[in-house]
Image 1 (cartoon, rainbow, N blue to C red):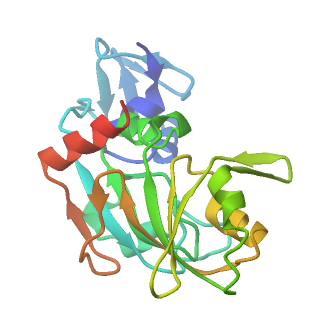
Image 2: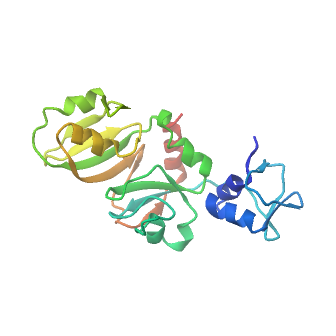
Length: 233
């Protein structure tokens, strides 16, 4: 299957797709001996793609990492508002990784990252049904409306799937979702009269944050990666 040249370069782990587009615009990329000037060019594994005179090999050695995202960081490569991004926190050798899903600016906890762009998209799609588990500190003690979230709810025209919600002994909520819509836990719990004060992701599929310190990243072993991929089948 043919894919855009910029995506091929990004999937190799050399740079982001935006970075690849800039390399192409600068005339640094050749396909089958011809300099390419537009990212709207499609290639597959039979093509020879060369960057600055060096052949690019599509990466087959998939790696997945668990990163403990700190508070007040944006899950993006750069932020137009000048806020810190996860790539400002990550050590330099990990800055070409793709994130799997997002955590918002104030949400902390487990963020998976990989060198495999195709896997990143697969594990993020709503139909993957991968459970994501969060701990939520909420304002208020009236839990009577939580069944709205447990049964699924439509808010402002957007339908949110049923959430599994457990009330912990310390009054925090353990919330499991499978869809990953933007800010869904904050939106739904606010709708239930329990606005979120703190939100922390502790699991993504079979991967747990365990004792990873804030701001640190660790590589997952093959067994864990296999278990993660199987959750999306």
